[in-house]
Image (cartoon, rainbow, N blue to C red):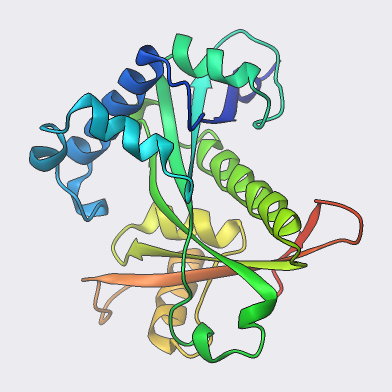
Length: 234
């Protein structure tokens, strides 16, 4: 059995929260803010002061769906089974991400497809430094996309759209997102040039690496199925 088979991703609960689960959520989030502060809009100094109620409120947010990866001996199960709650309570979190139901930003707001899809954002992506380059980021993105498809189906839509911000100097993250099908906006030629160079290993001389770029991905649900065909652009 390969090492990756010991990792599993689970959707965190939004009610009946176990104190141990909340504590593990807090621990990984604070580590992320402390180790990679440039990747987040919030700060360690701010969130280390959060009360237990504030951490619980994040998990109770019906519009934010938190996923976490743990490393243990249990057999792999679907990310959406309730048995996963016990795994999240019993094991340290080593990776996390949030899928957020959101409102569309320009230029999507002008699209004729706006009212035919559900719009999501991805935020808070983090993988513990000791567990990187093992496919965990891709696992988290796959779980987000599956959840986006599930929710879109529940809401009666046949397609969904996911957007995310990433620091321009975060090469590993940009390459990961690219491999998973996330691309720059069609009219952002500068971001497209940056992504091409990063993916090809070309020199970044002359490029502005400050700030963020927006990457996007869309999915279309198959009929009578939650499965999705990913990569179609809106």
